[in-house]
Length: 330
Image (cartoon, rainbow, N blue to C red; front, side):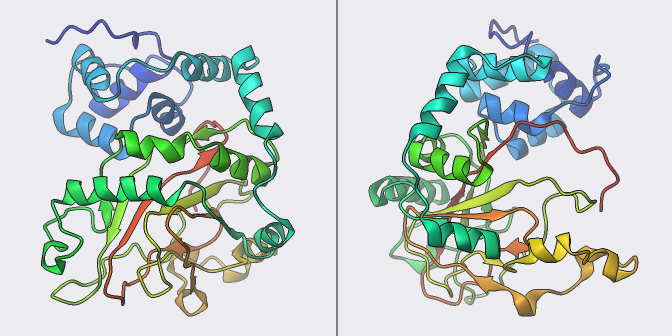
């Protein structure tokens, strides 16, 4: 058994998460565990945490020691905010001041951007981070892959998660997560700054050919389609200039309007996730450091890379803290 002195024992929901994933104890709470919000507060990736818990089934002290070794002690301000939210209390004064500061930042979207958002459910935040900051993340990704940007023969090493690269912590990756411009962009779309930033992974989508076939993900939804569908966003940060044929994000623009107009009911019980919408998909090119944001009701996915350069990206999102959706999954 590994002893841990990390200040994690009293974090709301953490022991419940450990108990649920390892089955080594009773969760001890009647309410569901807000897994994603909890892990994003701690700076842990969902996939890395659930994989560790499922694979190793650590005892409680070992799990706490792993968290400390992976991300260090929790940020006091983030923890205080999460605890207040979990307990149904008012946000701490420091958090209220942070939100007010975000709202006071000048707008980052113009009228055309917002009109496009309303129409298509997709918008590009230009220069969410600088090109140099994006290049630093790209360099880190190349290092993870042990690949050479100038040697295509090194781009196709063995991977177990398709184009997803399951790495979550690095100083360069923290830059967009702490970007004031990015925080303001999401606050404009939500109408408030009471949002938490995600701790998500990287992506590497090389050109098809040389024995490599695009593995997806193809068009899909990540959330529950049972009405009413709460408004939420998803987003991808391009780390290099990304052309339309370079494995760029693809979406079916404006689909949130069709969902609101009863598209699912029109299927007469058919599974909406089996409907082929690929003929309506468009790709979204953008530059290095640009962030593509879309409503999560929009069917989306990666696209086959038909260029001669890989697509490099990091997933970064801001969203309201919330409890798991326990309704029937559709």
